[in-house]
Length: 630
Image (cartoon, rainbow, N blue to C red; front, side, top):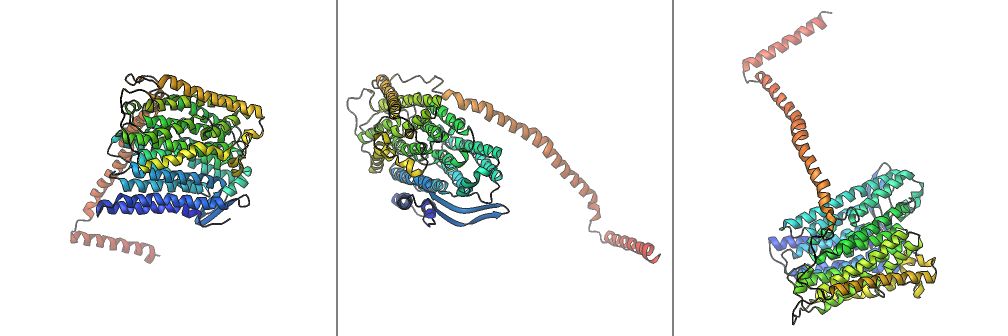
């Protein structure tokens, strides 16, 4: 069904970004503008996107499979036809709903967090552009338009991670995120090209691809699926392309919340779900995706156990939760994986906002032990932070339990017991490191007799309160049938692969009980070890886990340094002594040859008259011998 609304969901924050950029230029070059003017535009545009998406959500029922909007034909060359168009099917509208809503709340939060910052207006211009890029990615009608949004979020992440570019480490972190993602993006674009050749389609429209993909060349489809997933590895920070994510914490906390909760890192999961028609045809690739997700979840959880930077603990928790999502979509439980994307958006945004509130209150301190020593009374932040910790740990009745349990139950029902066991143990570690974080920050004794009270700004408190409601009750959206629910998300998305449809009640309850026991065990262990932790002793910072298994150092030694050596070799020998030698030698030869011929043009009239006489004589002789002589 055609609609003119889809493009305005994207244009709203995009136009906002353009206006904010112009205002910021005016602000720094001509006359200073009040922060409120930037804040109003920056926060209203995401709200408009959410309202427009909500309108389509209400109108989109079982009788209306999808909304479409074709703006114009962008490329029409031979058998390649690409339309600038948008697709608002149930998957896209589902993603757009919480991307725009959570993004709007994070924009409100940023008003308070970035207050009095010199780059306030510039930040909101980047922020609006980031949201517009993500919405373009989600609502794209074909892979090429999706790739534009894909690259858009990559560019915006670079701009925002390196926002405080005066510090070299921030620029380095931005460069790292950009370069690592370019590796994955190369795989993504090659995957799209391979898919085009596999199908020989005149149109790369998703709806056309879904209908015709089974007629494609099998080996090219396999290559395409693998290459596309390499792109997802980079964007969603999975092994081995994950190292950019912890360093991305160099940016202001609002961008950390937006990247981790609702935009960039979930793009890979969305892409796999969008190409589900392709992955369902390729044997074993789903298992490969699920194992990458499982090991990424476990690996990140182990590293998070010993991190001392509050934002890096949350960053590794994001990587771990993304691993669960890839287990879901890899095993074919697309709705379960996407449901975890949904619940994760609420509690992860809330956790990052809470962390940002702490950082603000403690004058931008990020070390958890130093934060604990300077502890203040923060009832709103501490309360909502605890809600987020319980939700991410998978303890019922909070939302994280229902989404994570659906994925684990699906793995068990599918017979992938190793993946299920890894996921279950990771759930234990998740509760352990997240409650470790909570107890150190808010409960471990720090010797203070009386703590100061910190009044949390409304721009931070209100979003935290709203997100806490989603973190607590979000699970009801896909409430299991065993408890009287109707699997609304599964049914509405039309991707119902939920294990509870095939699993007997006793087994399902048993798996749920086991999952809860592991989560509570992790929480209890954290309580015993950290609720009364001696903050003066800290934890060892020499362990291999604290140093993240030296993966960055390994990459630096194997790839970065060797590539630098190769570049120096190519520059000094191949470029200077071979290519430059040939080019410069040829140039010098031409100069010498030119100098030899220079005497022919010396501005001497007598010499020129001689040239003319010789020329006329030669022509006359030729005419006489070849024409008159016959």
